[in-house]
Image (cartoon, rainbow, N blue to C red; front, side, top):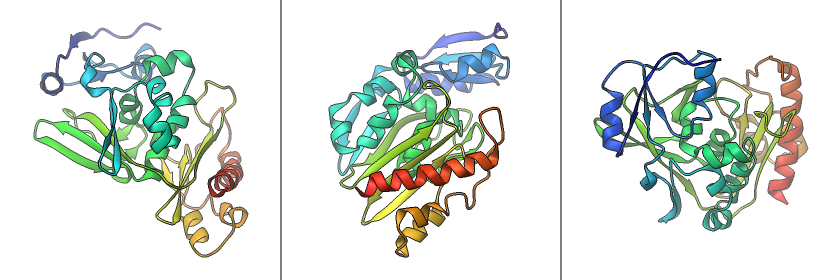
Length: 272
């Protein structure tokens, strides 16, 4: 299908992007475009103005920031997957980036665009939730930091305001094990269910993809592990507190079963 009519502007700085976002109602940011453009072609999204931030190269980087790694929001998935610092210090992010979509999507799609889109079937949000990452947001009132657990509000709904720009993601350097596993019908499909697991500070943290309107922490699994349960027993709690959808990819019950299987496998891999 053909998108509805829209205006187009290229932002030369984050500050200009913020100003343009406030210039009219219905304005959207365009980064890689692999999340927004399909919705526009279906006319689910009908922005009156697109503000292209894809050329702001100052927002494409991976660098050390104290005991954390700072990732620019316009870093492409392909670059994350192949970044040597990220693969050494926080391998789950690089690994997950390598699983997103197909090569065309990974070469054009950006980590910030994927996160800001707020799709519950997207891979990286659950990983950031398990890592207890921080997201740096710039808006007309300046810069603020939002915890990953406070960023995702609902299906395609985040903490970003109408003039906010996600500029950076901060993740911890990992010294323990990690795993990200997902089930999908075809290699380039969204995750039917995904599981992110990390060991940090002597404890396991587990987050789920596509098991509710936002990425979810599997707190019941984490509590079972803290109480001495093994991976198989803890995984039986994977469905607690979840509201998985029923769609063409599978029923809610099917997703709960998948969640149990993938959580057990991810915990086994993380603890190994």
